[in-house]
Image: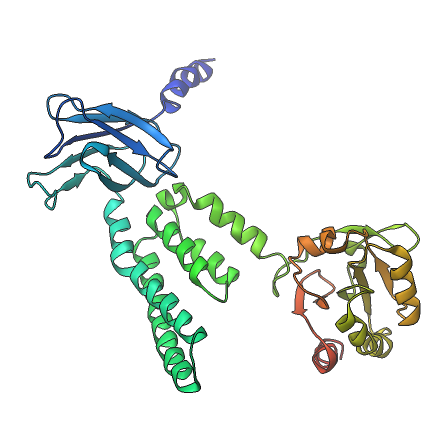
Length: 359
């Protein structure tokens, strides 16, 4: 009983919400001027205060740590703060605020380091990429490509060092998000590896959930990850699940009767099936058709003997959307444990991969 009473006494203290306060005294602000804190956009107002006795105090409560902007409409200025629920002070003596000091925003300096060192290199990468894409001749393209590769390597090394040094800083999550957005390879596994090194307050950033979502969705269909199950009806209307093939090597083949390249690739797929069907290998065809008759006719004409499924929703096919299929033909090879071990294997590449794993 005593333990129970102790918990009742402690819980209200533990659940007490934390608030933020931004106090400031800055040249040019006079009594009656309005100051406000904005979140995701200029109109996303989080707190408003009037200047009194040549000072202001913004107060409120935040759910995470992120970049916010303090707006000073009367002098047409704004100040970015990377902040959470903290007691922050802003002070300056010079009219242009060049000597402004920020105290209390624990990770604001990390954010400023990101802006000063990481982001400019990322901008150089984008610049040289655009230069290469717009090159008028081979010499211009090769020159831009050389600069792009150099800038990209420096960029990746800078990101790596920043994250290693700032493992507990929410600014590192911002750096990761920026890195992924500007990476032409969109390496989601590298993003996950770097994200998993972070801890503490770094995971309280407003971008944390966004990055986690990008990782979760981006890993779907990536070689080296687990295949996500789906179920669609076969040609007889019977539900068939991808998971029902567990224990076998299965090639999930996305195609459609109206897709010329798919139909031209089908003889290669048939040859691979006939050669390896006795070695714990099969194929699951997923059609992006919306006309069942055309789908069935194509299966017959191309002599496709393996299981075929479709929800007859064309490009809205649920399985193709799940795996982010943007063009067909497309496929992925899954091992007996449900791991994706190959993607978009066609012709000789499909034969070589099957020969490798089905010895």
